[in-house]
Image (cartoon, rainbow, N blue to C red):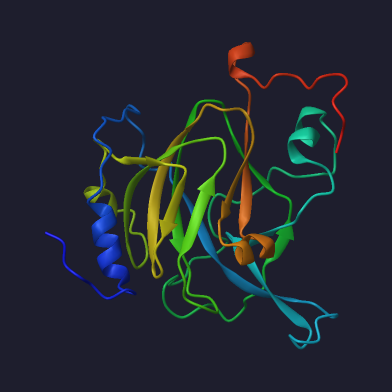
Length: 240
């Protein structure tokens, strides 16, 4: 039975979304619970001497305190041609420090900047907690992953608790998506298999956030043989 709720009721939305299922059984085998990465999604403030409106600073966005820097060369091209200096593979698997993500923000709102990838072996199972942070303004984020569908195992309000929250996960017939909302003041837990080699972006679908740097990329290694590898670029392929 449907009933009306307040339009801005985050708790009602989380409760409703948690009841969704796909109707199809998922299978990933036994995955160690320790293989969990945390992706903190939020805003920050960095120096900007030319920004008069911000008194020498500007608002940026980040994942795990890294504001993504746009490259001058297409990243898949840089990866395939093995050019140097376009990116690094040291994107952090977890936030640089732990605090109460959904309460008082840290005193230092500065971020680091860089074109950083997180490297995954071919066919690895990746589990990510998309965690909201209460920095500057409260809002939800719509996170989109290129190159893969993922299973939404769970979501909730507050800070994700590794010991308690997985007990309520849907490991049977979880919803399969490529875009998912992260509730304001909460978290969403996703799982996917890295079986599509190449450079795969993950970013917020709010244009103001993606332009400010709320994005990152997974670099998925090739597997064995042509069916588990990227086709080599054509010799006459124009370079960006």
